[in-house]
Length: 463
Ligand code: UDX
Image 1 (cartoon, rainbow, N blue to C red):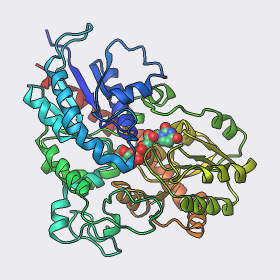
Image 2: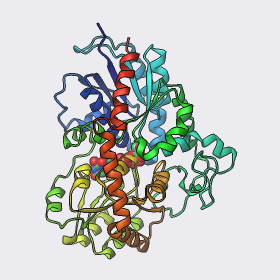
Image 3: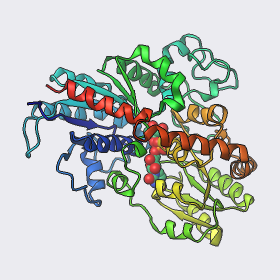
């Protein structure tokens, strides 16, 4: 009799990573596999306000991340998290895998899918005898760029930002510029790029190369969006599965799955507010789970948005504006009837709402895919990492939005938002992409077939 395949899914412990790996877990559960979803103690506690789904084949476990409970775990401290996960987290993970025989009625773990950002997670699994697959939460175009970091450094094209074209990323010659390459998080308030060759970026490059040692690579993307980048990645990996957009592919179009993965409590009240707005009249503004902006940037965004005359729904996390809450209070006083501010929104429901006309985003990959799937044009203002290349693709390859990159200026914001709200061409491209993605995740579509192939692959790996 075939042993039950049981996959341990281990995301890097940040919201953007948890979300899509949670969708992957849902897809594997839908296919009949057992899943252990591994959180950190800190995050599991934050999730605890949300009921876990009643799914007997799903188990939630946690390990320490090694940081003190009152550590901010914010974007300014990502290196702390990286270091402590590599030491304390890694040791706890090894102990957990080594002791994972039949427990709580679950069969033994037979395979690991680990976030490729944590190279140790792949190595440790293989060392204890479990086959490991790497999962990356970012786009194929950014993965390919990270794969090319050594070459970019050799060529001296990385990471000095400018409009100069780069030649170090295969297939992107001609339109990729130095300022589209990954960048370390910008300090709030710095208008220009101030990073040297940041060790975090070099480390990301090494992690990306390391994914070639895993049994396979899974990417949350679709062949219809990123065929060229996928073709360039394939020779460097043992196998590649392009299964996205996972939030739709997993059949999790409803709110329930995301709710259980959310580290913030969603403010559902904004949905009733959207119900009262005309079709395609609202700008949705969210800069993801990590971005931090200064009070000056807040003021530029606010003035630019107000000048468009459109209503807007703005997600302002409590930890998002550096230097306190004066700016937040100002927004709340200024916006009146024309706008709504929330700490955290049910984003996929918001993007699906008929009243939303465009999305001002930081071009995080989840947000980019969620907007693409709903056919919502985007204005991209980027903060760090893969977002810089995602935004370039949005404007010049997919033509589904406007890339303002790192320019936070009220006149630029106003012009870009107007264009995204009013351009028939952008809207048509966004609609066409949404239609294609719906085909990709439907039965027989490319991403749906890739999930089936992945499930078969996992079953084969399971003893
Ligand atoms: C980061 C990177 O930016 C991203 O590219 C990478 O692949 C994963 O980590 P983050 O910056 O948080 O993530 O952005 P994004 O990838 O867009 O993920 C944010 C997630 O939070 C999305 O799934 C979005 O739907 C959700 N969200 C955001 C909410 O549910 N409510 C909100 O109010 C804001």
